[in-house]
Image (cartoon, rainbow, N blue to C red; front, side):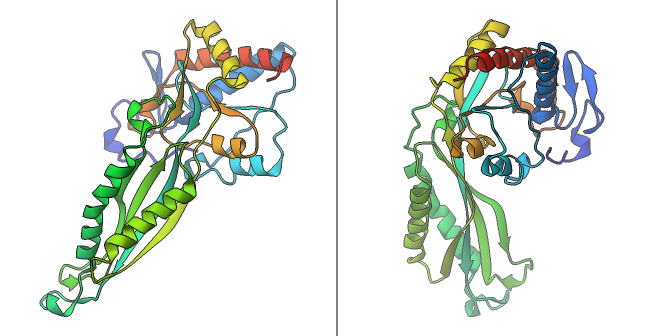
Length: 317
């Protein structure tokens, strides 16, 4: 699956679903996230089958961009995956292995006031003002959690700390001449692997409840989405085997980092199957206008997959 293309006028090289090859790059929506990775898989499988290699599985799933529950999640929970390890083809880049990823907790902070006519604000209780006060005070919470630092390496070092995004989604009054009686805003809390999800939820709710006592509004906090952080250790045998395969093909030792975003790896790791993510890049153009994948990386990653299949089917971790 791929995300929507966004405004068509933002695409300069080609239209989103009309792929164009130019100077070693294939442009189009989904090129790097993740049709490039799927192509690497198919190239590797073709070569592995021709070489008589066996004991490997291939799965394509349709719903990673909307949570993955009925794709990778189903496969992991159902026991249909018989392999002792998993490699996901997301676009980490040929010089980088994602050993895991951060998690998340999404909150919706709801503030209830009293609706009134805009000409008589003294008859109402402005829910927006209450929400604005809470959002302002949340900077204290952001400052506190950002002191935590993960011990692992990240593809961007700024991702080694928990992050908080306030107001990605807002709900409230839609009329200028109304004192809003209800206003809500979202909080996207990203979680490093060392943090406990239940503790993250508890400390956020407790902070908001403490601040809510300072205003006359009724305040509620709802958890709207939860996704666990997950990883395998950087010296895990699967990581070592993939790193050796990548170095053999590219001549470079790949980094072993934690992905700042979320991946389907969590489903398999939770099911007890060691999982890493490695695929052609660059990931920095995913979801963006004029998304592209480097064909050289598609070919190199296919060779890495083939090399890895040879290593692990003859000597599994």
